[in-house]
Image (cartoon, rainbow, N blue to C red; front, side, top):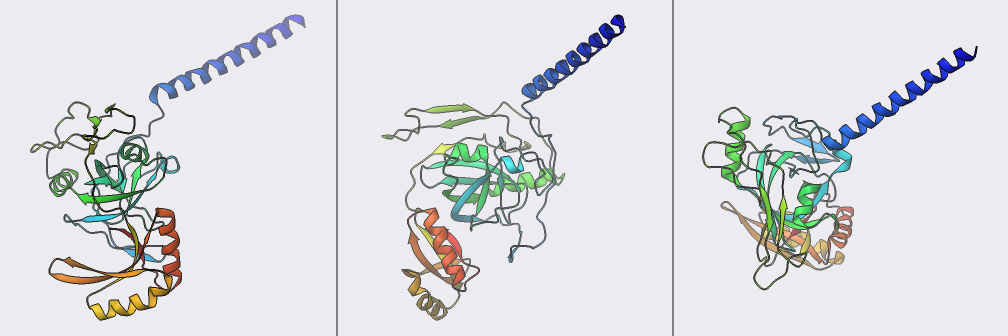
Length: 306
């Protein structure tokens, strides 16, 4: 009887030890791998028109795209999930979501407050809240200096040549070259100014996930710092018209909400008259003003930056 109890105790100790060793092995493996999401090649995608929360979006190839507005960022909630073109989203890698641009494509995003700009690969759809124009991964937001604030006033411009080459690679029309050395992120102080940390900052960055093509080479993922003038006022754009008299009628209806203005814009060969309310002093006030304009009967109103 005593021998039986001793055997059972020994068996239990062995089992517990084995479990503990297994857990330790799993924990160690997780630390070594950094629990990175699995990689996925993804596919070239433009997509059909789609509707989100009552608003229609029309994806299209637009190599002349330039826009100023509010950027946000996304991370933990979507980490490890598939993006709109079938890749795996990694919040620790520089990437972006855009509502209509082809996937993949490359844009240069400039933070209009601190002058930082970064070349970013678009591989997802979004954002769909609060009239933001682009959603960056957490890592991209960190590099542009707005992770803590959550939003930033930005200028987004597609890099046409590189986007065309990337589209060709994704569609199998161009060859992929082996990756070169890991990119370096360099944040250099402007003459007579001081960077965020009081000195030049140089941060090691993982290899760029963008395929490299024969000619010319895709540039390194580098944060640039340059002077920024203007582009820091937030308005709510309620409508855009070909005829000025129609814009004037809308302006009159919006006057009770606050200061309004009509801004002329030429796109291609056509002139437009945009009706805007504002400016708002920050993004939060801009959101409040936007909600007020929408509630007044203008559901297509959006935030813009001038």
